Length: 260
Image (cartoon, rainbow, N blue to C red; front, side):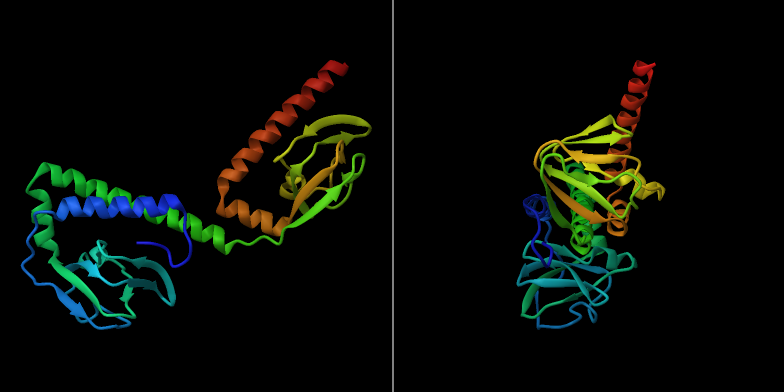
């Protein structure tokens, strides 16, 4: 199985691993039903028994939720398990003739439970499927979020952020170095790949310090609304920022103690 758009190599490798595990589980199973050929349809399994799963032998099948195609299945993939349990399920379609092997759900379960090794492999199969869909969901979320980012270039000595300005952008330093200066005192250093300017965005306050380029710099900017949306989708970013802010506050407190 694969996403309808490009996906990562790790997803492709996991897909192959899932098919390999399915082969091991089904290796000695002789289904009671015979292989069937299905014509192109917008609802392949709508008229077939809801207690059957289907091993795809040839062709490609598309899985839809509403009007969105979410997964494309390939030969070796097992289709329709949620459907056999009465769970909310997707609709399967094909634009070409396909061949599938129907397998009764209870027949499959009896086969799996007959040997401990099959039970273990079936557990691996279900876990690997869960992992695949988790990764696929993360990829889809990232694809749907397209920040209106821009690149800015600064010369050494230029002010990137000016103290007391409104906080409408979050910055990432792609090249160069910069420093944060408050009332003439350097309160922090900003290095390559570091996100800065986020604290004022989160708190709604004005900029608390100047950020000055100490070398020629290239900076990526993201509007605050889009940055907040990104954090909602990728909360680990927020954790990293909190850790960085905590370190900066710790260093600032140390500077204040040293001055006194």
